[in-house]
Picture 1 (cartoon, rainbow, N blue to C red):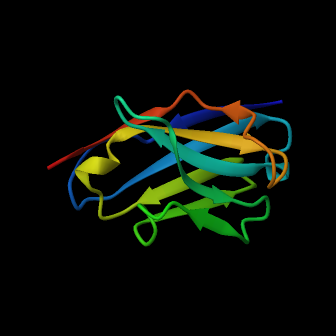
Picture 2 (picture 1 turned 60 degrees about the vertical axis):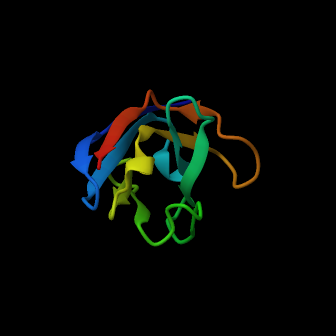
Amino acid sequence: QVQLVESGGGLVQAGGSLRVSCEASGRTFSTYVMGWFRQAPGKEREFVATITQNGWSTAYADSVKGRFTISRDNAKSTVYLQMNSLKPEDTAVYYCAAKMRLSGDYGYWGQGTQVTVSS
């Protein structure tokens, strides 16, 4: 069992940057694949980025590739999402999620943090 708490959301102008964080507690953080997802008003939740347990491998949605960077600090039980060159269409609630294996579904979710990008 792992509990996830996101932080760092807020309001930023288009073209700006923001870093959101997700701190985990409970079972050993380093055993989990971590991911970031987002949900905009009236839309389905969508995948943003993922990182393997050791941080060596990452993957991104095409819409954020080259602008967002996922990273993790296993000593701090925290995963980050650095967001640069933000666009109004990045406005959403951002959720972190955890799973035990690369295959399979994410079984643990945080409560989300709001990111709003103004034009």
